[in-house]
Picture 1 (cartoon, rainbow over the protein chains, first blue to last red):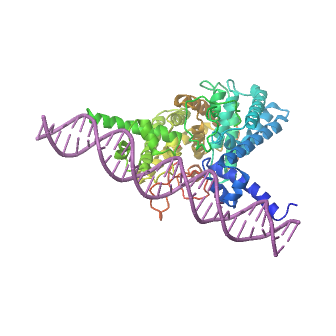
Picture 2: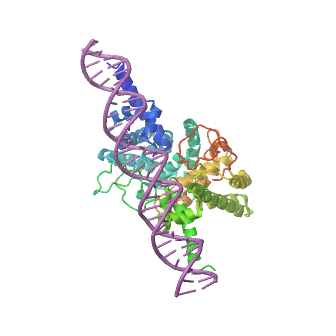
Picture 3: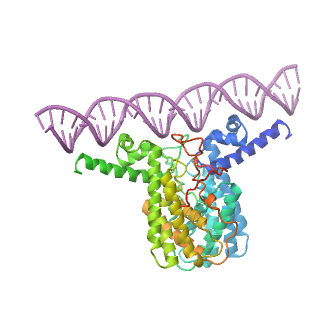
Length: 230
Length: 230
DNA sequence: TACCACTGGAACGGAACGTTCCACTCCGCT
DNA sequence: AGCGGAGTGGAACGTTCCGTTCCAGTGGTA
């Protein structure tokens, strides 16, 4: 069955997804042709699988969300509260899930299923956080995790492995900072603040085909029930 | 002297610079028209002052560099080593200097003066770091500061003041993390890694007029003698 | 051999953007 | 009062870029 042409098709499907991850991780506004080029396929191979760019982006992001959930569920199995939290944070950073969710947010209109998954991801993260709360400095909130994960994802150097290495370094530093003494200054981030990129598409504007998604800093509030899955 | 038309010109000059800061901070690839719009001026007002987009970007970045130097020099006056370092880090984050330097790097070809300033900035930062080294956990290097500053700049929410507030929060956390016990994992970042965005323009390609500056992750090495000025 | 699912990539249409250009305004000087 | 020109807003232009479509080729499969 899976031989010859069919095998090539399957390989291409995976190559496209992997290439898309690499390319859009490096630049969320990259052209679709860059994905095809990186995957070593033509553009048709891409359009055979996805109706358009937005769908590819959405699939990619949804994958990241699912990976986040998987990491969180795995971490929740750890009996020690702090260890579970640490496994969770390190796992999310390691899997580079952030860029696949927050960084891509706003470049497509999320599906209902995505919103559900996002909520589940948020709940899982909050649960892990609550378990570890007793070992953390006072005043830290779950939304802080979203921000910190976002900050971790900003650590970036040439070379994927090296980037991962360095991020491990800084997660360690952040985890230590979370256990330090003293309260942090300033009001903690609101959930809506931490997830502002997940602005819901306004109901009157169902789905602009291709929203270039300028990453400005809107003062708007449209954020929907999407999760803090960073 | 400064009345009427001249006054308007002066006001516009400042408005343009401020608008450019805001706009390019939010999106380093924003169109130049967005700057004009934000400044409340026409495009001509912009082109009267700068020969082209690249020059505006360069000026902006150089300004940031100078501000970085000013912050570092002011911090160096503090007699207590750790306090000086803390004032320095907090000051750089507060002034949002990072995005004006690292984030804009690569979008223009730096001038000789900029390189000199960048080197000076790097030296100042290293000196501050060395003074505080005794109070920090083992294994931390100056290039870590560049990365951490970059991470701080990634904390971003709608609203400039709120963003500053939250960054203060996370600088505190990072500073505490820097004083924690234990060594950080992984090889520390090389200076070249921390400053990879400052890739020098190859000598054979003097100056493409407008380099869109995709922010990909090149494996190239072209980084010049530019500084680790976060 | 005939078919056809699948592919690579050229071609297309349109949007975005940097830059130029021009008609107009109004200050400052004669 | 009248003029010159610095300064301005914004339309227009040419180019580049990009998402999408289309078509001819290819090679398994029957």
